[in-house]
Length: 321
Image (cartoon, rainbow, N blue to C red):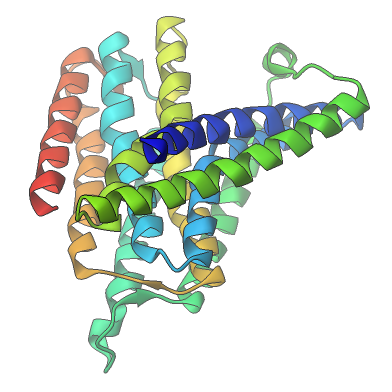
């Protein structure tokens, strides 16, 4: 029972820790007149991916490669099918043009790149599949390219009025520093609890670390995106929902997986190729449904379809064990 309590408490600490850290960092950035665009591209963007990042760093340092890879792959599938599906059921989601022609294809390419790098040793004399440190540097290089693209988009579409609405509150400096320290401590402790508890649960039920990473840990670390997208749908402000989810997927594949591999090479189980295929199918499905019905909109029927496919995927994972 204590293991489950620590798992839940770890998720709460991860989510609240990320939120508090972002609030403190944003306040300090505004105090020193760092632009909203830079704050959004760095602090806020990285903040939404902090739970996955902390889990993967902890897993990599402890040699739990299956948990690290399962967390990234599971989070991405959950983002594409569970979060987009649930959000579309609440309210139809219009898709921005940049997301359709650039970000979704870039996410698909990032998935293919990870799949290629993980399996490329099949072409040589190696028998063990893995994502090496060199592969990690390659993924980080493409992440830098993506950030350069985001910077150009933000600079081109700079909207002062919108920035004013999104401007974070400026707290007293001691309070901001306290938020940073508390958020960092929450992330570290929460990440430790989640990894240790997930591994213990997997071992007690004879389940693989990969399964726990693809399901419990992946859904848990995707909660910030789920809550954000759901609230946006309820407030009829869904135009950026998919862009945020796709951006998070690119962060997971290139930044988080790349950084994890540079810390410690990640042995890759050939079974995980089915999860890569699932990400490819989900991304492709997202592209296919856009021309159907109202132009560049994911409607409620699409959302139901996405949710059913995700449920089917979870059933498949249970059967795979």
